Length: 406
Image (cartoon, rainbow, N blue to C red; front, side):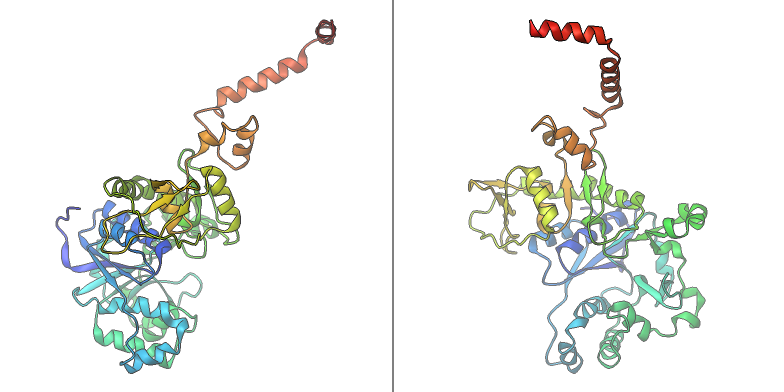
């Protein structure tokens, strides 16, 4: 991918701790490209991010940095080994080691950029937006920082000696930068740089007044966009069960629009130009919950056995083995389902062809074929036909019945 007119000393940085969050990182990175950022893009990954997903990340990000295992020779790192709950926190504060950059803007992988935000690089460390739950604390989903090994060591020491009051990186960072609330108001970012996606429900009047100015949307909570079920034909969205929601579907659809327009085609292109693997064993464990998994098998008609991404030194693409044992290349939907709970459904047409009641079942699932059997004209004709039958004179019905008996 060609890069033009960007600064090589400043970067937007995000973190992917597994393949599910890497989907978020892919869409986040593409949203930054779409709004014309001139800065570099960097992503910090952990060992849980597969090689197949890293290959996709290289198509968007300028720099990929893996977080190395904790070094037992360092006293602070050794102390963290006894605090496994701080493992993810360590991964995030590792961003301060990206000293090839003079200034960075960190964005959580569950963010989406709607407008250019390069002006954030005019801010100083630590600039962040207030947290909606406790405004005297900043939300660590978006913040400006200066990479520094000294700051990194200080954060490690703080993690060891004081920990995190909320068990995550936000609590730790608010302890370390404890004077954020009062020291310099210029380091308080406007809410439009880190707007929680549920605010249109919680404070609708303000959203109506200022919503057009929003630059970054943050999908906080358990119901991440990639956990939704999305129908590529109808645009129907279904929130994940048991994870709550509250997200404005307008923003979730924007996330999916970027994914289906930019990310999915690259995945499919990657698979078309690479041969399938012949020897990779299948060790994949589905991340879908039982009901999602059952529905997915029904839509795809066969129980595909998905294989893990290939080793780094292989040029092959992950493959699908059907229940009959034949190997085929994965579609974008297969790869999406393989890498996490992200679920694409483009099976509306096939779902309706199996039985006379298939259309009804599809409708009940929310899979409405607006351009086919569910378009207004078809439904209106069906209603008229039903009414005409009900209005048919009883005498005519009796004559018809007698004729049938004869």
